[in-house]
Image (cartoon, rainbow, N blue to C red; front, side, top):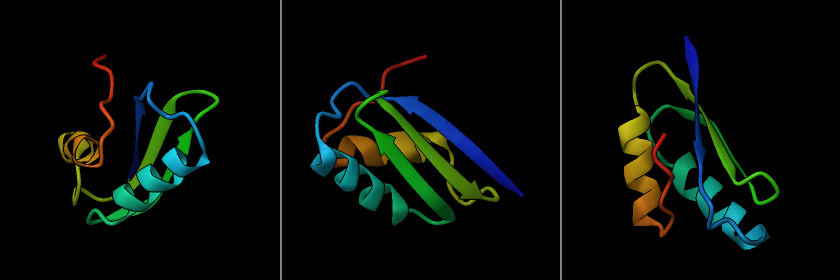
Length: 71
């Protein structure tokens, strides 16, 4: 079972930001794919099973310098 977590992050300004987010989130357990878009300000993470949840994704984003908006 896979699930997708989508978050809004306003601080994505360039390709380097996208790369940093994708690489940082891609290292979390169970993450199959992480995509960040500076055009939309959205981060989409595809996770296998329950290895990583939204709280862990938000924490990792904060660790690498990006703060997702609250819903």
